[in-house]
Length: 431
Image 1 (cartoon, rainbow, N blue to C red):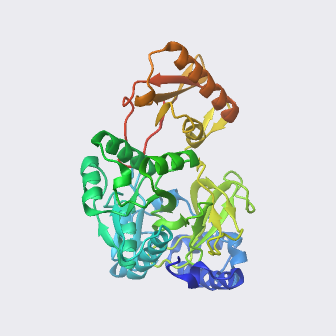
Image 2 (image 1 turned 120 degrees about the vertical axis):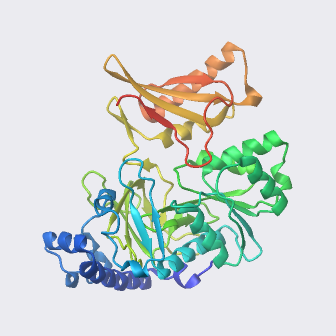
Image 3 (image 1 turned 135 degrees about the vertical axis):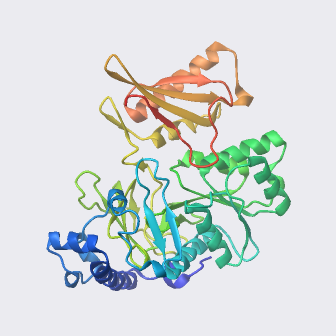
């Protein structure tokens, strides 16, 4: 099923015409209303008249998170504050927060994106959607909330945390779709087991999980533990929030809402455009936003795009599962390492629990990679031989994937921290 077949199944040539018109209008708007973009375009020798089609997007400047921070709080807004009805912001833990403003039309468009995502997951007027993303300045909770209301579903705005209460509500209220981070989904499944609740006795059918990179192996774990269909969703507050793209039931990539957001893949070092199937940094241009429209925003997220037709009937390009972020990539002894590569290996082994910690340190001027993993409670063994054999097996596979040796440390069940939001998997002691 589709929520809006007109756009979700639009023929590619008609979609490009629509994107070209919207890009042209966008460029005129930011040139007139955002001094930052006017100055950037003038330095590049580009004027709005030069942008005749979507193919001309490569003439336009990139935008970065630092640009948003430097314009704190409202310097990038293209609409007057009188027209801004919602303000969201990042946490600002590494500097000034990035501030995002929404007009009424922006909120309506955002709800449209998440309505499409929920219908993809089987959502309808009869659905009960439990939103366990955080509410507040973070965009996760409110995006899925308004999407659920748009399709006429019942919304449980429970937010994150208080896991036993989450499960009680899920059971008693008959939730059919849950929205949260994938790491929290695993934590909820683990807590269900401890409470003696069988997921098969719940009405839960699907989960929409995002806000952090996760692997295909982790998806299999979630689907097995919760007995649901687990779908990936992508978004970031600078662009709009969750709903920029979302998986369909085919589970072969996330459909980008291309009528609203134009995606590009570039080399993160050279910024040269890359083709379909090539991995690089995904860049978005917001074709319809009014409050804070962005040209070629560098997300730092590493993925790839495909324009192959999806069996579900949607015609939009699809993003592959995120490999990680270019600024989260670890360089260890000259080798590029993404946490998702490590997670992909660990998730294959039923003998260990789906919790791990990556610790990078320096000894005698050499980088040391340690990976702490928990034994599964059910399979915990005091027999040294079993532990040594498993350690050797996992270490060998990690080496084949990473091309560097890692020190594997087994820790007691439930000794690593659990997360009710975005999981933190890396401690880098080198700095």
